[in-house]
Each structure stands twice: as C-alpha cells, then as structure tokens.
Image (tube, rainbow, N blue to C red; front, top):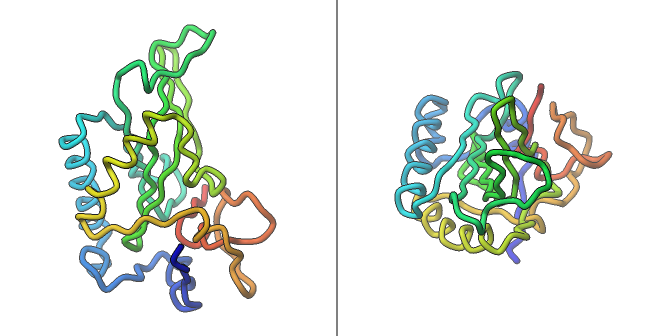
Amino acid sequence: MDTFQLSETEIKKLISCSTISAQYPWNSNNLEIIEKFYLDVCDAVEEKTNCLSKKEFDSYGSGYASFYDAWFYQDTPKFKVATSMNYDQYFSGLVVLFSQLSPFYVFMQGENCWYENGGFSYLPDSTMVDKLENCAVSELAKTIEPILNSYGLIRLTSEQLNIPLQGTWKIPTILSTTDEYMLFDALFFWED
C-alpha cells in the first residue's frame, strides 16, 4: 500500500478551506466550478452504472463540510435492507466522499431510509472507510472506481488515512472518532 502524506502546509491550507491541488478544477479555487465538476462526475457514474443517487453538496444544510457526499444505489433486492419496520424505502449504498479541496475520495457503505413521515441516513466518519460489507455495494465500488479515476480522482484507503497527524492541530470537525486527529480529519471534516 502506498504511503500517503500531507505536508504541514497542506494541512494548514485544508483547515483554512483552501485547495491543495495544482490540478483543475481545484486550482481554480472556485467552489462553484469544483461543485459543478463533481456533479458532472456523479452524472457520469449514474449514466454508466444505471445507479440512482442522493447527493449532499450543501454541508448537510448547516455549518461547513470540506467534502461532497454522494450515495449510489440501485433499486433492487441486493441493495434493500431487511428490517422488521415498515419503511417504504430502505437501502444500503456506496458512499463516495469527494474532497472539496483536492482530488481525493474515499469509499464507504451507508444506509438511507425514507418513508411518508420522514427518514434517516448515515453520518460519515473515518471508521466507515472501506467497510463495504454488502456484496452489491462492494461490486458497485469496483465498477465506479475506474470511472472516478478517469476524471483524475484518487482513492484513499483507511490504511492511508487512519494515521495520526504529527504536531498540534485544531480541526473544526464533529466527525472525529478518536482523541487525536487523523489524516482523514484533515481532508474530510464537518463543522456544524
């Protein structure tokens, strides 16, 4: 597994919500351009895989997220979650967190449920990276990864991201699952 590192300068830039890539569209430092790029990527994924999706591009309605959250699934029994509750729609799907500030992304598995009076969903954290336990979700990831790579995106793994940051850092996130910040926290943070 390739080692992944961020320099102190890159971590500072990420925490201050600045891009760290010289690659387009991140080098534009224009969040509208970056968001459109990712929406186009998601459209391509849906078209090439016959997937449906739910996308969260507005920081979950509050605060600030340093990532875009796209959840892909198919309306088939392989993606349905068996439950004793009477939910209209309850699916497992492939979560792709796209770094808003760099070309990096991660895969996770998450569940979404919606019904007449509401619904619920996952909240991503570092413990979810690469945990693709549903076979259909895992197969979908294998299909989607080359599509994302063709756009110049780079997948990071839990091995690469669950490494403590050296030094003293204050990252504005509620997604951290440990007492110390990890590389994941520098790239994928949410301040509510």
